[in-house]
Length: 417
Image 1 (cartoon, rainbow, N blue to C red):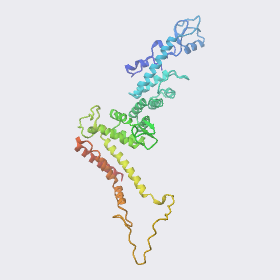
Image 2 (image 1 turned 180 degrees about the vertical axis):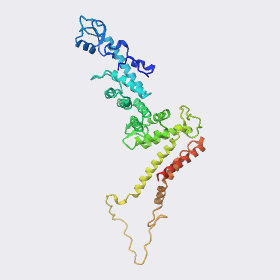
Image 3 (image 1 turned 45 degrees about the vertical axis):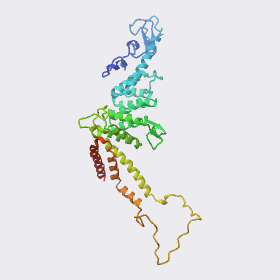
Image 4 (image 1 turned 90 degrees about the vertical axis):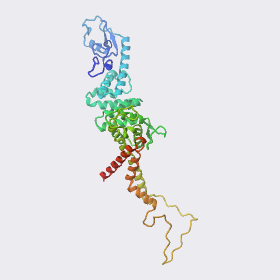
């Protein structure tokens, strides 16, 4: 990989990244100078290359073949060494910066290979660039096939993240979500992307509510929404479903849906069939293709949350009351005495009970809970379908769409039964 010629497919703006200046490369190795020296013939070579030439018993000049009177006289050229080091650092950083934009998988990996070439293969790196780790350089050197491009880019994003460049790492992870060849690759990239927004602890103002010790910064919502609006690989509903698989923070996914719905309310509900402009007018996404399943995904998420809470309450009601190992408290000394025994033949008066309750008949509150439990799917789907009526400019359209969501939820219930 000499870097002396432009690769096919490289843009004109990248030509300088792959074309090493001729006065900065060794005529023997055709590589960028590291330790240039000049011989008695006045020609500049890489020290290791010319010393290897002399070690073979050749006392002539490699370029002209001239027999040298003093072949072992090698003088360092500090001017060229300084210029070569400056070019190496500048070019390597530019390659990594352009690779982080990830316009294409092939182009990004090609840029990383060029940066790895400038990185050096010795024990100590010749240049240090964020995201360009020694592990990535070794991986690129040993995995030259195109089938390893996605893994190389993932390692590149991991290096950016570990170096503290979370913003650049997020951009690479999101592009990997779009360019992933299967669902597993996309899920892995999205999980790492969310990790860039994760912080320890959490507060109500800056972090999304989470049950664990870590929470996701709300700054992730605009970033994820912008990605959904601009990419073409996934619909909004597909991205929400993928996000639900990789994170346990269901509240974060719900907040993302609400953020998107608030931004694209008119586009989802009332945009004409031929109009591809959103409510903000800044993005040319088709409401009928990319966002048509977002409302349904949001309704399902909300329904699952309510159903989980109802199941928890139901399990708490059905749990045996005597399962605890705590001892029953002793009756205090001032407790009321037991009622006198009822004589034979006389019926004991019934205790005071709530209306509708009695022996073998649950109380009113318990009966209401049973009704809600039996019809929780109906109640949940109806409530969240009604929540879609939030745009007063398109009430009729939203009403029809709410009815469709209601039927779809019930259809999913019947199909599962």
